[in-house]
Image (cartoon, rainbow, N blue to C red):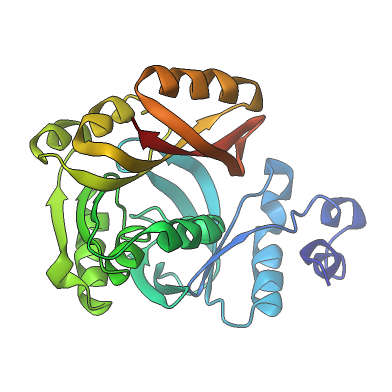
Amino acid sequence: MSLSSRCAVCMPPEAARRVPDRYDVIGDVAVVTLPDALLPYCGVIGRCITEEHRSVRSVCLRTVSVEGTSRTEEYVVIYGRKETETLHREYGCSYHLDVRSAFSHPSLASERHRVRGCVRKSERVLVPFAGVGPFVVPAAQRGAEVTAIEINPDACRYLRKNIRENGVEDVVTVFEGDAMQLLPSCGGGFDRAIVPTPYGMNTALDEVIPLVSRGGVIHFSTFTVPEETDILAAKFRGMGCVVNAMRRCGDAGTGVSRWVFDLRRR
């Protein structure tokens, strides 16, 4: 049964039809986005989500999208417990986080798993904008030596906890601070860079490319409309990269999607 169908039992039909069937589940926290017209029913919708996902203990309404250098969203708990700290499991890895203070998007799980499969043992891997570690931990588990950068103090605290509890503390170095300022001091010779770029920070690629060895790989994600992907690909070629692949990884707004480019430095 879809969420909208479940809600139709206890909501006016017209309102129930507007209930989105898609929402995120991060550990035991569900996150939903609702139009203003459904706000009077948010408690009912929250309860229906917990009936659909019995493991969910908190339902949060997303009030502000990811923004700023800390990449956090704003939430209001609309049903269940008030705490938003949780433990999220993904492809054998465990991540502690608080959804209110550290960004994590479960819809990117398959992309993170794909990138994990590309990492080779003994590679030196650079991960700016590391968050709580969803790209860092899998790469380290593959036998890579990982350098991670994260500006958000809360995310950095969870990142350190996650690398410790996933048993990869010995092969991960964490730098807390602004990646755009710290990248030039990271040295060079990286075999791979995984760059989950925040919205509007495409200039990070300018700093990353010189740090990757020739022949090395860069997994670069950005936000754009489909019509501009070829323009970006041409730009990356002009920056000294071969575009091995590009793929769409979910919507980010009206017409805008997250796109991932697999680049190889010439």
